[in-house]
Length: 174
Image (tube, rainbow, N blue to C red; front, side, top):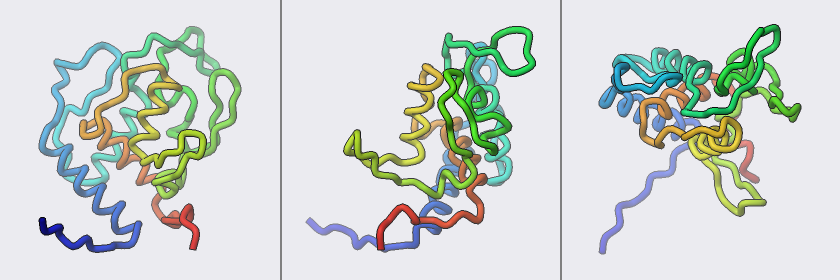
């Protein structure tokens, strides 16, 4: 059996290519707003640029509850809200964050550049998508978006945009 030759590309080029492929997936299968459950932000229109995908990703990040029943009380709020990514990663994930239980979270600026990452406790390699799935399940206690869904694509593009200018591949030893 003949296996095609794999071309090695720099990690930054690979991430850019993945974002472009992801953008194509977002363009190919937009979700309909009238099918979204309450509290769920769903991409409602086709995107025509990475910037539009990043904008939709920011809205998913801030507004999508992923079907959770967990609540939190934002600072200066009078009532509780369903959990979203923004519950722990305030201001779009740009500053350092804190979980409702007080655990420190680093800023998400540059976070996409740190993936893939080896997690010793799990003895597994985590991609950015796998980390998003973990955060939605363990942090928000919701149902994570599918790996090829418009919501996942938009979240990945958004987090990649936050990593613009970050050094890619620093997690690999020389």
